[in-house]
Structure formats: structure tokens, C-alpha cells
Image (cartoon, rainbow, N blue to C red; front, top):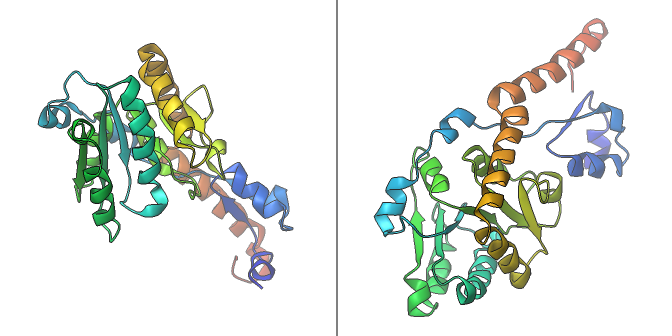
Length: 254
């Protein structure tokens, strides 16, 4: 029933090529689908400064791994914590920043952090309910941004991290591989595989030049594809095309 209604549309917008292919596989003509990503305030994110965040925790010279996302089970904080247990056996100097709005899952997240060995727990910080103005600074405080979730239609968190010049690590599942250019602006790992995630994190922590290069590539990607100005222009073009095409048909666009 849903796709019968959807097929009556005059135009379709997908966030990623993965979503486009999903629609095509269900009978939507590919030529009618525009792939338009989500937009961010790239300039505000680029101006972020993580110095105060690092100073707050005494992490001025430590490598920081961050996950900045709503505190929910589907973001897979558990997988990152398990991966970091492995990371810490090789890089005991690494720090972990977990930031996001509180939910009913937050107590479980706090319990998982409390269950870490004392030295690992001391290297982990949970930041909850921060302002949108503070979010860029949290991202800027990281050396590597990780989002282990497997349920992302786009993954705007990756774009926000790129805008701050950070390399990203995401799961090799769903739409995420169509957003991250593996080896260029980030790395992918097998979904729910803490060992594979740990290896990706360790690879980036071991190579500052690679991290910098990936972060710069991600920032360029944002400036070329995901600023609000670019996304707004793309959306306007779709709406204008549809309205122009049906102008003489005396009906509303769908």
C-alpha cells in the first residue's frame, strides 16, 4: 500500500545512493530520483575549538576517540566500549569521549562505563545534555570520530565530524558505505564486530598524517556537497522542476 502511494509522486528525493537503489528495487524509476544529502553549517563547525574540552579532562596531549550522538542503544555505544577495551591494551594513553542527549538508555550506558577497569574508566568521559553550540567543540576535541550504529539513513554525524576536519569510522552496513569513502575520508568496520572496530581505531591513532589527510578530505567533501547552501539549491531545483512540469495540468504536485 505504501509503495502504491509513493509511485504516484512526481519526484523522489533520496539521501544516499543506497536509498536510491532501495527505491529502484521496489519499482521507482531511477531517473526520477534525486540524491540529496543533509546539510550542515560548515563554517560554524570549522570554527570549533576543542581546547577547552580537552583541558576540562586533562587530555591536552592525549589521543581522543569520540562518539557524539543521542544516548540510545541503536547507536551501539556498547560496541565502541568493547572495542576500546582492546584499543587500551595497545594504546593505554587513548581517551574516550561519549557525548549525547540523555534517554532511558543513559543509565545502562553509565553502568557499562562503571564496569570498566578503574584505569580505563578514568580515561572515559560521558557528557550529557550539552547545547548545540557546544556540540562542535566536542567534535573538535576528538582525533577520531566513531559512529558504530547500523541504522543510519544518512549519518549526518559523519558530516559534522568532517566539517571539523576529523576522520571517521563507521559500520559497513546499509547506507553508511555510500557516505564514507573508505580509505579516503574514513574507515569502515564489520557491523557489531568490536575487534574490527578496534583495529580501525588503532590504525588511525597510529598514523597522525593519515588522520589529518582523511579529515581534510572529509572537510572538502562537506564544502562540495553538504553545506546548507548547496543542499538548499538542490532541493529548490527539484521543486522548481516539478512545479514547472505540472503547471498546465491544474493539479498539485505530489
